[in-house]
Image 1 (cartoon, rainbow, N blue to C red):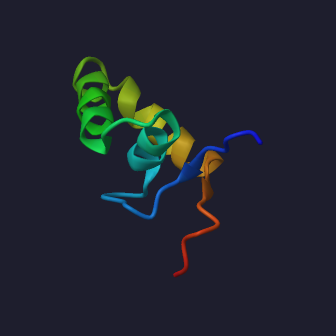
Image 2: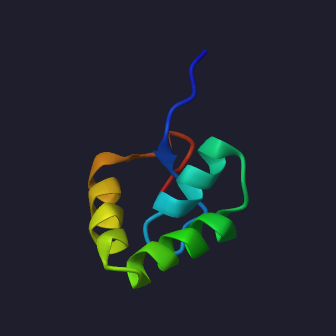
Length: 64
């Protein structure tokens, strides 16, 4: 069975960083810090976050 990348229900903004952390099996805080560094280093993190937010699906386990 293959793993799927989903937005996480453990979200701060939209669940992208926590979803990536769940997929790779690491702490979401580390992903959020790396994402913040990319954003501060040139702004590419903002574009990548918006793109990932549009592309990634909500987790099927997430019930609104």
